[in-house]
Amino acid sequence: LFLLPYFHKPTLHQYDTSMTMITTPAGKAVNNGNSPATKSRSAGFRYLTHIQLILFFVQLCLPFFYFNYPSNNITSNGGSAIAGQIGHDPPAVAPLPDKSDVDQESSQKLRRITENKAQSSSPVKSKSNVRVVGTFNNVPISYVPPSSTDGGLHSTAHCIGEHFHDRAWLHRSCEYRNICFDTEEKDFVLFRSPMEVSLADAMNKHKMVQNGLLTVSSALNTSVSLGGINAFWGSDQSALEWAPIIRNEELTEGYYLLPQGTVLLPFHSFAAMNIGHLFWDDLLPIYSLIDMFEMIPDMTTLMPLRYTLKHRERALWATCDLRDQTLRECKQQFKKVLPLIGVDPKIMRSTEDSILNITDNSEASKSRYICSSKGAAGMGVLNDHGFKTHGWNKGDYEYSYNAGRGSVFNRFRNFLMKNIGMDPIRLVSSEPPYIITFSPSNSRDPDRRIRYNKQTTALEKAFKDEISRGDVVVRSVQFNAIPIEEQVKKVAESAIIVGTCGGGASTNMFLPKGAGMILYYPDKPSGRGHNYPARLDWDYFNNAGYARVHWLPISEKDSEEDVDLFVKLVKNEIETISHH
Image 1 (cartoon, helix red, strand yellow):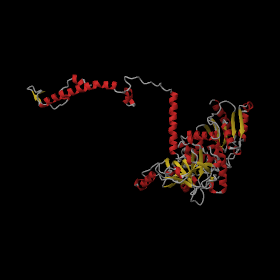
Image 2 (image 1 turned 90 degrees about the vertical axis):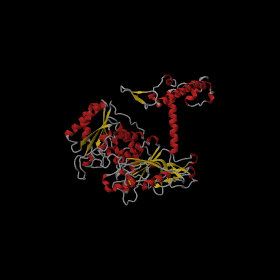
Image 3 (image 1 turned 90 degrees about the horizontal axis):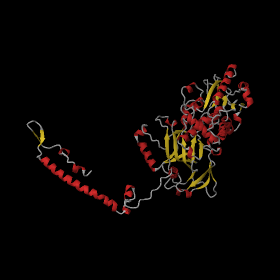
Image 4 (image 1 turned 180 degrees about the horizontal axis):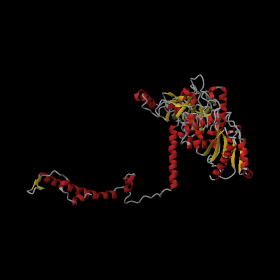
């Protein structure tokens, strides 16, 4: 590159285009070669080529420096390390690592990063000063003394679902880090860091915030709905708008700490005394909440606290706290069903009757705060019907609330089954025996408390030979009389289940993939003020995706025509399953 300009004599216009020109009689403009510009640039060219020639010889000598310079003075980083080895013994070449070694090293590095990240986000700064001193709602707690806080504990939040409307609180859900339950206030508390205090002050003064034009998804005081919404509550729905109590400082005093991996979850029960509402309006939203924030893989203990609404003379209509009888029924249903979400019924209490029990004889209660490294809240629209009812009114059928949620419902079903030790991946068997399960009298509503005598008799006649060979089994199960684990087992081994819609059909969700479900529904008014037909919970079952659902009217179910159609439908289902 240095020699090239020396052998290639450039023309002057490569350096300057403003040379003096003369005009010939023919009118052609030529350079006279004697202009001052020409002479100066010719001299400059000679100096330039001389300089290039000198640089060429300097460059020619550079390899001698590389060959003879002591290698121990050459940096060991990058290409210089290689240059430093020229003329010396070559370095030992390490063999290429095996792919499994690379994967193992990468996984170990990732695990170390994850552990360091988990430790840095943990409220505990010095584990040497932490010891178990008692329980909170039967969950072990440790005491973190003030000396272990290293400047104080502060909280963070991540909220999603914002849609910039006055009722956006109904749609929002929040994940919290370092959330505490205040045993004196009987509510949940977040602690601001100095930076969060500064941000909050700036936002409170900003006119765009006041006009609703500026939102921050990490604001600790973001409000959410504590539970699913009942359309019949009307203006009382606003009672569910909630945000944690905010302390404008870090927690510098000692506090009690729940085990790592515990998720603290405040919620308001929709109507847990009804098994259907418990599944669709409490358990489904709880699962959806921890699933959307991907808490399940690291979760060791799910700790829901049923929130008792404050500043109200009377509980919301049809909720657990409305009267003593409904509260007893809610507690009974929770006791039966909580194992499905991996919760020991002994640890599920309300914000009003939670118990802090110090078992260490040398320790008295030293703090009002019980803290967890993780928490979540916001279940307003995470149930199966949103702002509609479950299918009582004509307006409930104008649109599907659950379109596209089939995968969520399937994961919900799998999550529940795994927690009681059952295999959720099992498909319906294409081989006999085909079990047809009837669920008679599975509702307290007289319109839906029906039996299936004609249907069972017709099937026993139609499948007489198959039943005698053991290829088809027709049975009736009184599900409300057996434990929940047994209910799940009997549904999961069925090829077809027959029953009426409503809360009693909620366990139908445990059918194996590819099975069939026949639901009878009340198709005529009964004087209860509802608009029929009432295909209750249709929006869940019709979008679940793992079972075929068929709806038959109750009013004509025992007619000869309807019984004949029912038998043909069952035969078609068995044929479909046999080719699954």
